[in-house]
Amino acid sequence: MLGGFLYWGIFGLLMTLTGGLLHLILPRPLGIRVGRACIHFLFRQFVRYLELTGLLQVNLNDLERLGKLDHPFIIAPNHASLWDAVFILARLPHAVCVMKKSILKNPWLGGGARLAGHIPNDAMTRMIRAASDALIQGGQLVLFPEGTRTEPESEWINPLKGGCALVASRSAVPVYPLFIRSNSRFLQKGWPLWKKPAFPLVIEFQLGNPIRKEAGESLQGFTQRLQSIFEDELCTPHPLRRRTNRI
Image (tube, rainbow, N blue to C red; front, side):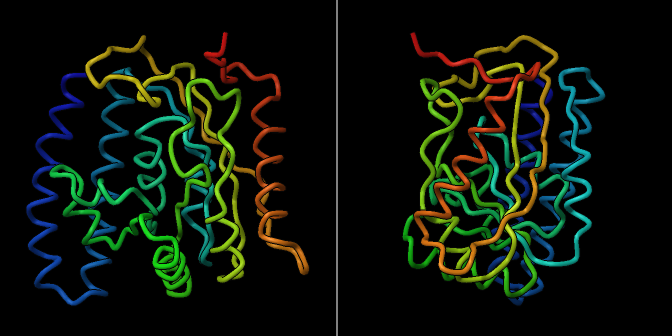
């Protein structure tokens, strides 16, 4: 676990320093390609380290298959943990992620995220436009429809925000629900970074069937349909099914 933190500290800081510099001097299209390739490589090696040390057992086969698609799409995961995006970007080489603006200013993540063209979610109109443009250019958009990590008290998932429906409507690309399950609440909302979990961590990423906004369907209707898909799947009996903290 200490080795994992050192990996993040060293390579995250190096990525921020070099990424911030390259963001200023490289042409935008080239900078985005370089940034996404670097993040993809660093995250892939980090996941491999966790597996080799026995800290993690994870099934990423569905994400591996998704990363080989040659058309743009939105991947919409439930947000179980702080590091969900690490596993996704480790398998999607052309991914662009919608994330909190504070992450773009983070000293261990910000420079690389800016270079890779990741999108802040602070202004809805600007986010929708940037996300749609990324899809038009062939990007693989990672958009957490909850908008934040699942609350500890939520049974399966938070109420979904409308951003995913807006981007799907504007870009007319398929939306792939991604169901994330784990045997631990490690790095969930409220989990301190210093708190050691029980190892090995077991995580599963299961891809759902793609959906599209139907003709005549309202944005609210699409969001409700996506909400039902998540709730129906995540409540199904499963060894890694979420256990609520509610009393």
